[in-house]
Length: 406
Image (cartoon, rainbow, N blue to C red; front, side, top):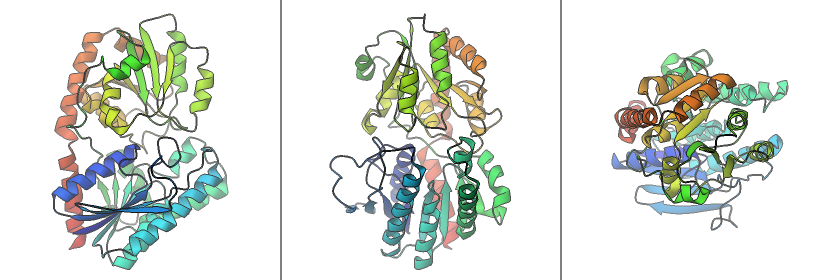
């Protein structure tokens, strides 16, 4: 089959969704498909186009499985400027629609959301190619932006909700990452049969349990201390106030170091809040090839989400942590997918979102139980190998392609 995939990120970009779609493409080409990836120039790490990719509106490259068209993301350094971000998404989506439309005939169009505008870009391409459109939902928008308070203007919310409904209406199938997300969308979609649950996955060959005493840990100047790590986007969805509060309570313990590895719209805020905390260290996003090293250096990994977000978002970093064989402490809504995965896998502990006392108690229990952490890490790895393989997820997409293409 000839397939066009429209995604905001793709390797070598470092965004988690880019990691996911890159591996999906690798698996789909193994199944014999020809693929045209329409994506952005790499920009996620510093919110600007990476060196070596600047000075161009778009770039085209041929691969052994098809081709990649990369488009300027029009990203603004001011990450809190919603108008600038909206204009950037709109401009990128318009060019993505053109690139996907005027290309070799495709039999399937797969578009990822967010941003919501890529759903319409996919629909335009699907009309041109007379092909089915699959909309892949990584986070439900605008719900996530509303829950975090990023968007509060009723007029903007109404406009985004209309765009969301239109995207679902135009899609022939909508894939979501969990049963939680499926239940959330049932009432918004004309025909429950459109909805398919296909989880994200993790490359268990590239991400594996590694030596904790590695060069990343040495860069931090840490030896035998317990590293409590948050690795990922530092934005409005992630209540890192919990982490800093825990760091304050544990400031007298010289055996614990908190590491926040990542960038985002709220990093400067949290750095300012942590100025008087000697046990908190901030690190920038690391190159993709260092992911395994970063994960291995952490003794306990944190997955915190704001209240209400766990039912509309499943961070892909959770799967990477499991594959790395490291214990997890999640602060999420009870009964949601993340909570269930952590509990069923035996990979660590899960506490209610926003409960700082429960979070601190669970964290101290993990820090003071090194043997329990080792056991949780082994269970995490086992779960990743059995349930989160790239091959199984690619087969699910392949079945959907064949079903819609007939």
